[in-house]
Amino acid sequence: MAFYHVEDVVALLGVSRSKAYKIIQDLNKELKKKGYITVSGKVPKKYFLEKFYCDPADIVPTDQLTAAAN
Image (cartoon, rainbow, N blue to C red; front, side):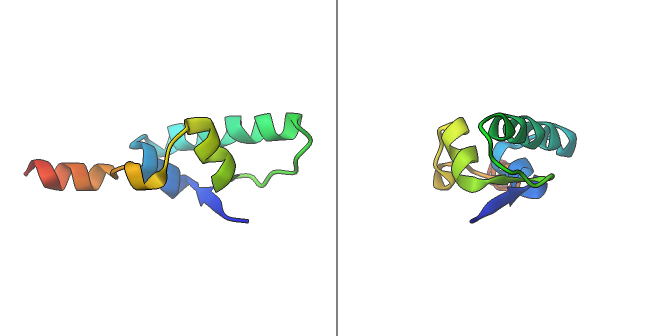
């Protein structure tokens, strides 16, 4: 099973590390309520993409946006 780590969430969503940790924590709480075992600091890619209803190919990391603007 593939997981996103905090650095991945930061890059995908363009949020701070603390916000990324909070997002992962919230998603893991939802999974625990459904009876799944979770790993702190990681979220399954499939669940993340389902909840954010996105394709990672459609998301442009913020460093690429900055480079394109210059």
